[in-house]
Length: 424
Image 1: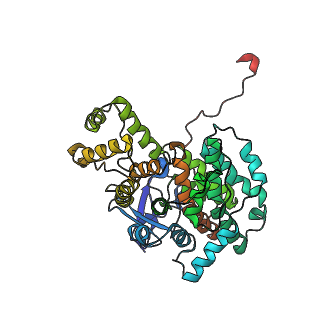
Image 2 (image 1 turned 90 degrees about the vertical axis):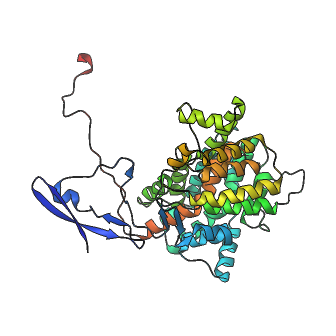
């Protein structure tokens, strides 16, 4: 086994080097504090491996993303969202019998307790759908207390089925609440994506028929967002889960982490940027000149992890062009997006800085084309990310990892005496 040496104040210690299955290397500092009294400082945990995981492999330099070893390109082309969900949660692609059973178990639990509607009714119509969603998911712990009290393997599976089944209902209800429409109930004759579209867009005054083009687009979008290694929300799910909190409360915490504009809100910011360009009445090339002068921000380009082209963006760009063509969408915002993309991909300033369009740039465009309002974009992200969060929680729950407890470097006041309020 390889080791790394650390010398401090004349003392040298050896720290083991761990090697992953894709040859990633990490220095194991588990004994560092005991041996030296030191802790490490790594703001944002950018260089810290907080866990071992077999769920998702990501190589930002080479632009690689694999779920359980399967390239994202193959899964997006050949699979569907529920099959990918099974793969992430249970580690292998399902057989036909396993897939049918998994699908049937989800359908058995789509109906939501009517008392949850009372919680929904307590929110004002102006409530952000992400706040509504996280609250409804967290409430499931109260409706199913055995999720905490009796975490057996069978019970964990039952909670997984429940959560996968009820999440589309919660998302649809959050949307209907914001629109002031009556909520729709699940229709088990539909598949997962068809059912979701029904709950989002069906109206009691007319028949609803899910568009196959929209269903296919939704499947791809959800697959591409299903997991992304140890990001902010996935790490939050694991951190909360390490306290042995229920699946529901852990996922609710992940939803709240995703809600932050630096994490899940990027595709919404893309559309807002495109709308700003429209209101300014300028050419996309002129907007890029403003970006170069740092007068405005360019949203949906570049990625914190990928130093190459986002592999998900390649897939979604192809799907985006196809969907817009098939749906015959005529939207000035989408035309601006095409112009911005074309200009940026031929401009040396952005090429040299590897500022390529990422998945958020294209996903926002597709969601808009599908008729999904901007404030629901992050909720759609959460729906797609659910299997990954479940897989991360399940993996953590099955491990012997201790409760998460980061250290800090204290920078506050040193010891001082209390002064009476009359003397301050």
